[in-house]
Every structure is written in structure tokens, then in C-alpha cells.
Image (tube, rainbow, N blue to C red; front, side, top):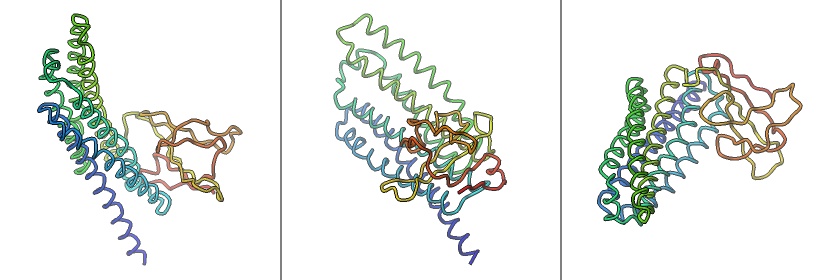
Length: 301
């Protein structure tokens, strides 16, 4: 009985890996198509990138649901806990990568090719797009292979991407100062520049979570805790919430301790983008970074 349960659990983890890798490859394909549409002025290709964004959004929700189900049903620890929590963090970056590819495609729909060439930064944007695309693809490959070397290369290339962003931004600013009547097209190109820089940042985020998956050390270099909450029984249309205390990447709702009289902040965001209720909900469990290295899962009901 125990063996069959473990096999089912391993199959669920493998399926989670597969879904995340598939979503990552789809996001990489969206970047590639968006940059091709920008180069060629292919309006139909740009529209297809925008249309596919909803599919990636749906994949994000499905992966979040599966991760939360694994937390509630399996209560993973050690390497399994790192795997599920890494997937739950990475999926947000991958979804945003797809969003920014869609944003580039939207700009392409109304960008005037002749005016864009006049600004003089298109070739640099194409080169920056290639760098960002390779960073994203390598970050996803690093996750699939749990390859620390590839993850480190992705992180190192971010400096090159940032340098290109700064140089292109200065060129666009100088063009706007000299040609204020053409500012609209120049600003569109600046937004593409910014989206590409953000793509590089999201690739770095993924690479850093790959390092965490392998080493249990994140860039914050300090322990953190994961809190899972189940809304009180009898409340319809409610779902469990998930938050991280101590993580450096984004503000999280700090779960209330037993000794605290104050409730959780009313508008602190959960990992799923929802809002914590004004009063703390029913606590299901707490995972610490020590649990990820083999400690016990702490559960209070």
C-alpha cells in the first residue's frame, strides 16, 4: 500500500516538472515569435502571440492548483518540498515572461516601421532580444536538468542585458530631445527595451530558484518559512492561501504567530495574487527552510 502511494506521489511530482517545463518552453516560443513579428512586421504572428497568452495563464493556474494540492495532501519535506515550492515560485516568472512577450507583440501591431528605423535602435533591440531569449531558454533548461553551471551563466549574462538597456535608453532619450514630434514611436521602442530587460530579470529569478532547488540556498541567504492557510469551514468560494516569510524577492504576508494578537495585514498579497482576509484564517501548516533539508513538517490545527 505504502509503495503504491509513493509511486503515485512520484508520478505527481514528475507531472509537475513536465507541466512547468512545457509552460517554460511555450513562454520562450512566445518571445521568439514576438521578436520575429517585430523584425518582419508580421501582424498575424503578433496577434497569435497575444492570443496564446491566455493558454499560458491557464497553465499557471493549473500548476498553482497542483502545487497547493501536493502541499495539502502529501505534506512534502526536504527535496520534495524544495521542488514544489520552487515550481510555485517559478510559475509566476514564467507567466510574466509570456505577458511581456505579448506586450511586445501589442506594440508591434501599431508600430510604424519607417519611423522606428529612424530612431536608430532597432538593431540593438534585436540583439538584446536574442540575449533575453537565450537567457530564458537556458534558465528553463537549467531547471529541467537541475544544472547549476547553466543557471550561473544565466545570472552572469544579466549584466550584459542591463548594459544594453542603459545604452539603448540613452539613445532613445537623446532622439526624443532632438525630435520631440516623433516621441510616440521612440517611446514605443523604449517600452520594448524595458520589456526585454525585464525578460532578463525573470530569467535570472528562475536561475536563482534552480540554485535553491539544488543547494537549498536562495539569493536572500537567510532562512525563510512557508505558511499555508485554509479558510475557515463554511465559507463558500474560498481557497487555501500560501505565503512566504523571509523571502527577499517580493513582499509577502507574514503569518501571525500564536502569541500575536494582531491579525495579518489586510492587503498583504498571497503568492497567488489574492488578498489575505482581515482576520487570520485556519492555519493548516508551516514549512521552514530547515524542513527542506530534512527536518520535520510542523503542522498546527
